[in-house]
Length: 134
Image 1 (cartoon, one colour):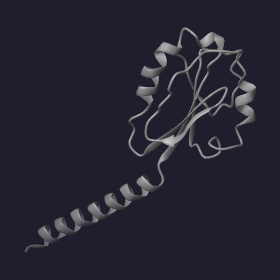
Image 2 (image 1 turned 135 degrees about the vertical axis):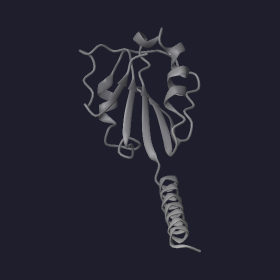
Image 3 (image 1 turned 90 degrees about the vertical axis):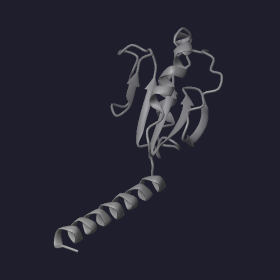
């Protein structure tokens, strides 16, 4: 066996070990995304488009999702977004969302996504949140 063959085998084995270790790490510590849905009166026309929006968000490897509305939590971190039946009711209240920001799952999330059709003047949410307009 020549030196080039030995080097190639060593390089392939090292790459495989690093890739396997990184895969195991990402499976144990996935990226956590919290998705917030605005269910105010103003979102009534946009709610039928939510399943497509949520489907476009999921499917990333090594990512788990928690789902909440501006009124209540729906589910904790899991590999799929399962909204169930959502109804648009009550006025918009982003202050209630910001009040929950220090608690779980907000404090566990690596990324927060808000789905809302609110105008820029109404969106007084933290700058680190990503806003998706349906």
